[in-house]
Structures are given as C-alpha cells and as structure tokens.
Length: 361
Image (cartoon, rainbow, N blue to C red; front, top):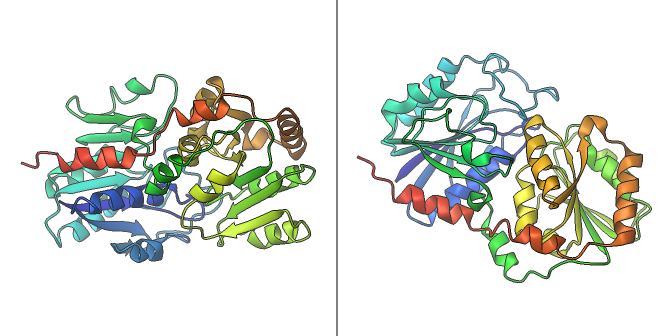
C-alpha cells in the first residue's frame, strides 16, 4: 500500500500526534507499505525527524504562529488556527494527487468529516486516529487507544455504521522498544530508588520544573527528560546544576530504557501513559489538557496512577507531599503488575496487520 499521513506537531501542540503516526508508519513499512507525511510548518513541526526516519514529508506553510494558549487538548477549529478547512483540504489534495495513494491516515484534532469527505475521492480507505470523540468523521477505520469509562461506545454516533473501530490500550501505538523491554521487565514494589520525570514534548507551563522542585528532598536518583526546544530548558539546566543525583536528558530515541530503570514516574496522562503501563511503571500524574482528564480519572479509579489533579490546581507543596508520602510507604505490591497487564506493547503490530488486510476495491 501507498499511504499518506496528515498530522502536525509544534511546541504548543506537542509531539504526540507525529510520534505515534511515525510508530505506525514504521510498523507498516515492515510490511512493505510506503508512507508519506504532510505536516504544517509550525515551530517544532518535527519535519527533520520524519526525514531522518526515512520518510518523505511535505511541509505546508504556517498560517500563524501557535502560542502557549493553543492547546490541542480540545478540538481546535480551523478558524482558531486562522486556516479554512477547505484550504487545508486543497493543499493536502495537491500532495495526494501527485501519486496514487491507497490509504489516508489523519491524526489531527482540528480536522473532521468535512475535510475527510473532501479527500475521500483520492483514497480507497480513510483511517482516523483520535482521542476526543467530539466530532463526526467520514472514515473506514477509527483508532482511539485510550482507556476511559465507556470507551467501547465512544464513537457509536460519530462514525459510519460500517466503520471498523480499534479502541482501547490493546491498540496503543508504542515503539517496538517497549515490547522488547517488557520481556526483561522486573516488577516494582517497595523502595523507590529512581524517579523519572517527563511531561511530553510541549510542557508550556513547565510542570517539569515543578516536579524537579518537588523531588529535591527525596533520597532518589531523578532522571528528567526535556525537549531541547522547550522555552524552559535553560531554566531547567540551572535548576538541576547543583544536584548531582538529578540528570537532564534530551533527544532520546526512546524513553523505554529510562522507564525500565525507574521505580516511579511523574508526568502527564497522554500517550506516555500507555508506555509506562507497558513497562509496569507506577506513576504520579498531572493532567495538562482537557482530553487527558477522563483518562486520568479512569486510571486513578483503577489504581493504575495517582492523579494529583489538573495543572491549574496543582502546587509544588501538594506534589511534594504526595511524593514524600509515596516514597515513605514505597510502591504497593501489585501496582506494577496491574499496569503491565493493561498494555502488551504490540498495538502497532495489530493495527498494521488490520490495515494490510484491508480490501482496497
């Protein structure tokens, strides 16, 4: 198959959409498929990373800079992005018309049934990757890897009746490193010796800095992963420079190694939730976007994470108290096993198998 993938990243949007699309593209390439990306040229668009991974990417012109207020934790309309959906559809169609594509994959909160219907004549099948279930889609397949209350029925009225639905963490799009590391997994319990801090590729609000401050009194080694293009990276370097047991990491090919070494994680509740679960890593989480809240609620209810609340209602003192209490008690027995039983790490393999078995007539 020849596949076109429409997705975006930026310092405001974050990197999650592009990274999971790349993971799926890698799995499809192993099955002989050819993937081409179309992304808009926002600050932090990841076009160079996509090329380094061996894919062609067409960068559409940026319409306006995306600032910190542009959170993709909700469905952002094309008007808010100062871009008409028809214009985006025409630009994407111009790329698609240069080759005969079989499948369109779209991972973008701002695109909906209107855009998809406009692209439909150029493709044999359309797949949508979503997290929100807040708009209508014209697609043949829908993918939503999230675990929230009632997730099985989220898209009942949002997609065509004959749409194949791939829902839940069984289909989580994780890099192969996670399934490989899972095979060597040691279940955590008791003493917390090593902590991992990671709040995603954007972290405009610098929750990373708050988490570091909350860890200063802990008797643990702390690994901190940051985006080198973050506006806070210099402040974070200054924050940790006098603390030898706190190490700053940038541009890692995967988080799997640090996750495997950690006893506890501190982070958000997006895609990383499924990576942590796959490796049985207990986590304290803060939600950064509206779409993360129902995920955090369900994971907290199931005892898979300890949710401290939304970013607007969480303080350093609250986080410090939670961490100090948790470290004093230790990781409770069974927490790690509960997490690892939820995600097996081969969701991308499952999805690629389904896509490659599609009838394209």
